[in-house]
Length: 241
Ligand code: PXP
Image 1 (cartoon, rainbow, N blue to C red):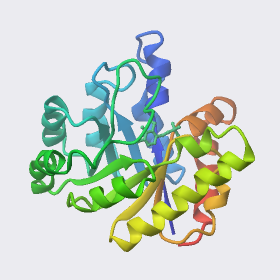
Image 2: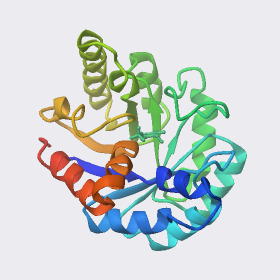
Image 3: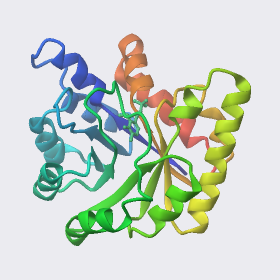
């Protein structure tokens, strides 16, 4: 059965709007776990716009499921990863001026560099994932790097403006999932997924995990985080293995 990983960055975004202490993403992580999330994700960005170093430390000390640290492939983040030891990291591209992660990582042009970057991380038993577009060139490159997982970027599908565009993007993702599985990679999906646009994945076999943040936190503003996570978890747990 696929699992749900909850990204709690946007709780931190709300806290940082007043540079205060509330709401605390660490509390949101604990409530998400109690509501059924099987992994907690946070993205420590270079500009610290939402998640702070203190959050990563506290999450590492208290998350009882799995902690996934999303990060750019920089020296600073490698040091933080080796010190805090999340269960898994997800390498993402990062640009200061973007609102959120805009596209997949270009792995194809950096196979050797990323393999070297991940070596000390893997040596500590920390797993890794690469956030990439559903592009065969990127998926084939990811399979050469020696990491266990990829996360296929679903943002283009989620942002499609017409049903025809959404269908075309969905087909690219489905082909990408099949290729990755043939190459022995475990496949996660994420970005822009919500309670409705996730449904076409219900019958797709072998998806390991869904990484979801914004739609859950937005719903939590109305119904509370426990209910928002539980509802998404019920959807995901109804999907085929
Ligand atoms: N996966 C990755 C790699 C991301 O960068 C993000 C956004 O932080 C997500 C998943 C979650 O996306 P969303 O907040 O749109 O659900």
